[in-house]
Structures are given as C-alpha cells and as structure tokens.
Length: 366
Image (cartoon, rainbow, N blue to C red):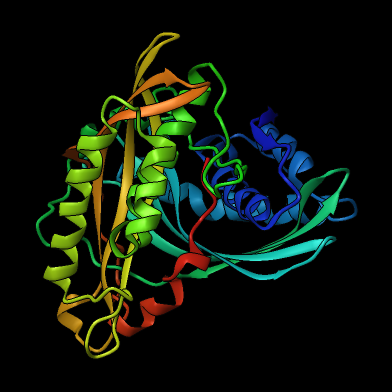
C-alpha cells in the first residue's frame, strides 16, 4: 500500500481489496483532517473519486464536514483542531455485489468524535455505510457512498466513560488511522508485511482483528492456521494452548456449539475493529504497538440478556521480524479507553446482529 494526499491507494482486484478500499475511504472521510481542513479534504476526494463523480463527491464531503464540526467541539466554544478526536473502526463488511468492473460494500462502523478539551467526553456512534466502487486505472475508486444509523451495541456494563484528557494519545498528531490492504497469501491470511514501522503497524492491526473474528472461537482448524501465520515460532505452542482454552471457555459461557450457534438458534457475534494505532517502540528486529480498539461480543438471537455489547480497550501488540514478515509475540489488553454512549439511541434487538455475523462479513485485514 502507498498513500496519496493521505489516502491509501493500490488495492488488489479482489473482494478483499474492495472491502479494504471501502473501509479506508470511510475511515479517511471520518478523520479530523478531512473534516476540518477544506483543502486537504478536496485533495483526498480527488484521489478517492472515480472519473465523473468528483464534483458531486466534493459537495457531499463538504456538507458532511459541516454537519460533523459540532461533534468535534465537545463543550468548548470552537473546534481546537489539535485536540480533536475523530476515529472510525470497521466492525463488519458485507459485499452486496462484486464483479470485475465494480463492487458494492456495506460497512458496519463505530465512530468516536469529540475533543480532549473541555469537560465533555467524546461520544461513540454506529453507522451503516454503503460504498459503491468502480475498478478504474488499476485501482478501486469511489463512485458513491451513503450513511445511516447502524446497529447500536450498548457499551459493556463493566466499562465507565473516561474523562476527555484521557484521549490525548489519540488526537491527530499522536496516533494514526489503521490502513487495510486486503492483500492475502495462499492461506487466506494477510500477505507478508514490509520491513518497516508501517509494516509492523499493519501486522498489529491484523492480529487484533483476527483475534476478534468469530472463527477464532468456533473453528479450531482456522484458529490454529491463523496462529501459525501470525505468531512467532518462539510462542506458537504456548499461544495455541492458551487460546484453545480461551475459545472453549467462551463457547461454554455463551452456550455455543461447534457450529457457532446456541441451542435456540442464536449466533455467536464477535468482532474487533482498530480505531487508531501508535508506536511504542520500533527497531528492525522488534516492535511494540498500541492500538485503540472496539470489540463487539455476544449472541444474535432471542435472548436479550446475551445481546452483543461493545468494549473499548487499548491493546499492546509486541512483534518480531521473522521469516520475512512481522510475527506477534504477545497481544495484550491494557487499560480501557471508553467514550460516552450514543446520545438518544436505543440498543438494537439481539437478533438484528445476525446481519453482521459470519465469516463472509469479516472486514479486510491490513
């Protein structure tokens, strides 16, 4: 992947490539720079937009930015760009249509917007974003997009909202948005990463997403292949043993069988989205990355007590350079970083979350 005016470009001509393009374009369009800097916004739109759609895309982007500015102010009198929090995480990606010429992808996203200034904690929100892409000039280009309120998952009852200043590590200058490539090797897992800090960030993002995939809990063969592809050889045996125990515990606690469903037909829903990344340390041989994540877990079914909830965590991913790529030595949850819940929005019924479950709705990885 490379970037042009802050926009990731150069996607594979595949379903995963289309998912990655849809996710990245949505993330860029929700970033602080895009929403607060008109010139930067117009340059980004020029990169993303397909031929003939740039003028309409600019107007739509300007209108969306005007609507979003208020949410970036918090309870202060004006927007302080350096203190804004504007992050988007992709929890689900469903391909509505795909062929050699175009694709349509529906994303389920969570956003966090606000300011580290003042006394108002940044708020989370959920959106359903439909992105229409066209294959043009050997890349996926944005033809159109539309957004509406998405499924609302309640924040985990064990998590309390942080104060505004706690979000200072995730203002624009302190952290980066995740970049998804959609590139895969023959195993179906992410292709080798670049031997640089950006490659280490990408490997960390993929690891957290894969650990949150429902197949991690329900499919032992998939889990073992995923760990073989992503974990360092020095920890593979212990990590495999530990995660096998974790998966069994989750399945037992949720009452989920080997097919990923409960006795009354409910479906296990788990997803992890990266909201932002920042480097803790980096060398040619080892790296440590901190990710701010949103993880959804629960059962889509008739039992409202198992309704999927969202938890906001900081995750530390330690990596080493091994066999021509970055491999993880540890993926460790750390302190929560919890926004305020959506204003005036009720949580969606438990059974409605079935629409975002399943392997086919997994987002592209980095």
